[in-house]
Length: 171
Image (cartoon, rainbow, N blue to C red; front, top):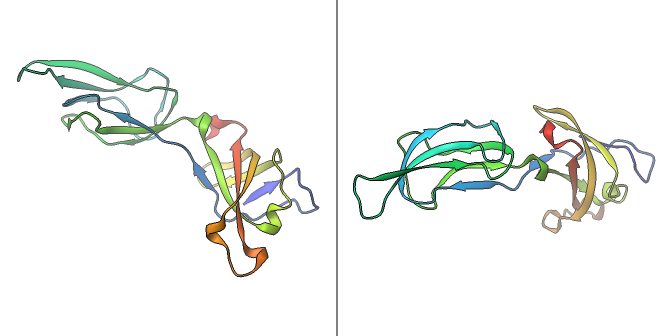
């Protein structure tokens, strides 16, 4: 559930159903053809910008035996969400090797009825009960209509409440 503190009406709790953690993924791609020599991370690892995630022996054009060893590094601080290669994997240019996300760019989405949405304003503070994380403090940043989920009654039409964690490092 989402508990809203700075509301326009007297109720202090909205049952927003399932809250979805959303992040724009950052795909880490191979820059050429080669063989993965080392994978230095696992799913769930927190990484710093520039940290080595994998090492690839790239094939040098025009040579069947010559390779160039290059490191695949994190473009920003974040959390590794998927590792798609293992040592020995053969990759081509553009092959997705791993996916990560930046905690500073994550947000939550929660469905609201139009009635509940009219009670919430941008800037309202909230506590989100997130499975596996517990209660997370967040700020409502927007209420967006969700026309694809309209139900029969006007009050049952849904909106999306967009919330940003106050401290992104907790997710």
